[in-house]
Image (cartoon, rainbow, N blue to C red; front, side, top):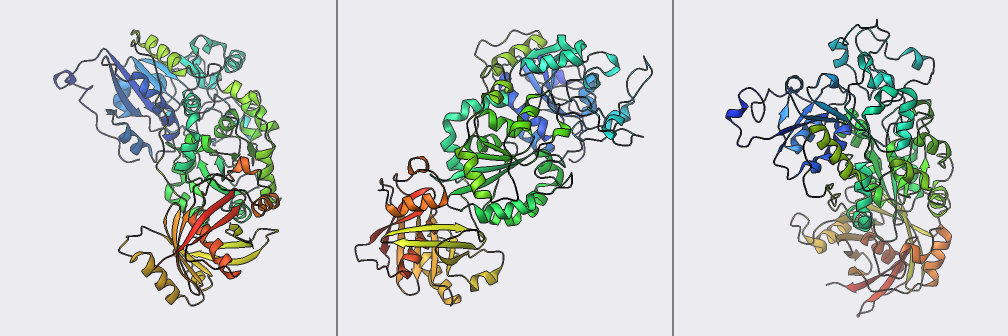
Amino acid sequence: MGPEPLAIRVPVGEGSHRWTSRSTRRRVLLVVHNVTSAGRLLDLVPLFHDDFRVQLLVTSTGSSAFQDGVRDLLHELQLPELPWEQALSTPVDLAISASFGGELDLIQGNLSVLSHGVGYTKKLAKPGAGSREPGAGSREREARETQDPQVPGSAGPGARGRTPDAEAGGPGPTFGLSPEWLLPDGRPFVDGLVLSHPEQLERLARVCAEAVPSAVLAGDPCYDRMLAARPYRDRFRRALGVRRGQRLVVLNSTWNPEGLFGNGGGRDVLPGLLPRLAAELPLDDYHVAAVLHPNIWYGHGPGQIRAWLDRARRDGLALIDPVHAWRQALLAADLVLGDFGAVSYYAAALGTPVLLTADGTDVLDAEAPLADFVRHAPRLDPHAPLLPQVARGIEAHRPDPAPAGFVTSVPGRSAELLRGHFYALMDLPEPTAAASLEPLALPPYTPRTVTSPLHVRTRAEGTDIVVERSAGHPPGAFGDAHLAVHEETRRPGDLDLADVITRDGRADDPRLGGPGAWTAEVLRLHPHCATAVYVTGPDTCVVRSRAHGTFRLAAETRAGVETRAGAGARAETGAGTGAERGAGVGADADPAAYASALHAWLAYGGKVPARGVVLRAHTGGGSHPFRVEASG
């Protein structure tokens, strides 16, 4: 994370009144534990927008094991940052935290704590907490500074890493809803414990009645932002490079050795699952993305995550920003392959099909709704054929109303209720304008680039060509085969075996000399290659065939007509109906798929007339008409 910043002098600090341009009536301190908890605090900042009476401040406890990424996030907030020592000595009117990490009970001001996930669901003993003599006073400070409530087994000096309960496999306390977390020194220290549903209040009352008076039912701002963004699902899909008719499968893992990304409990699913997904899910029918918990991303390091997933990324896996874009990916998803983390439950609450790859029963509060969901949700068998399971998981899904009912009891009202709660703690009248949250941003457009060799199967009937591409040899593949290789393949030797060589670029890219020069050079450099393909845009490419000349290909966006070949292709792949998957509504496929269709059609004896011809590439996602015209 880097060295702790120096104490600030403006807008708080010694003599700050001499330097500030505006005086304010209230100070609000955002307490960051790590990137995970900070993500929830980012949801809350708009509740204080346009209020000239309030000065926002931010600090980091430094107590989490996951410090990478925190400094960048604080820089993004662009709020005055207090070192933790200064934060503890600075009086504030309100402090807000989305974690129990750090010495929160030493903050000089009212404290509100909310969950950074979907309520309070996980069992976790408080690190460094042991039996103490009554009236012994505050914990030793150095013990507190080493604790991390998000790391099972982290503890203070002298601890062995796990509590006796944990060693014995006992139930353990629920993080955030138990005396261990809420009653340091035997008395409550949180002035406002934000809950999203009365069931959490019921669990709290059973185990820690002393904290009930501080509980506030105020909904879930994270979920409310997703609900508000549901009308923009198609925009999010296009931003992620998902084409019409494709299905988006989102892999999700919480941080935990037992999660999908982990290799604890004697199982290690992910390394074998990723290449099989790339081989068994046809490339033009499915788009696969990964949403990893920030503690995975920043705990192991973004560079390490990319290194571990290099092959998967070359196969087309999209890595989603774990702070700013995961909700948009969840809204865009057709299916989530997840585990026992909050994201899987949010997906179910949104009505998205979920197949679980890990259940995590040992780390969940058995009474939490998430635990009930995990007990009953359908599973993915990683050893059985994947395509039928994925297709069945989508098509047989019937939304369960329970998750949506338990995520929040007040959907759409968290902004109103949270702002009312915060301003009550500050003893300040609320602004007259209605409270609102920031809309989810539209992520930047990120088209999928696949640089792994693609195994292509085709079958032609007139001007209709069935195309199935995958980064591997799926079981039960049909049709005539050719190998299509991107010029930036990891193994240059693949180019010597390729029937089709592709690359993406602007038509006027001076480094490549343009489509004509590049395609001619490729055929000269690689004698085995029959077809060179320069993809110039989302729906266009230039194709040079060694035997047939050069052609321009462009998607036909007019409504097409469903053909017998297209209907048969979907029947064979089990990809659903044309109405569901976009057949007959114009082309929206990868131009490289059009090129493979043309390559096969020419090999079957097709001839391009002088006026050009419209061919149809058929994938499980529908029929994609494209025009072929001679070039040069």
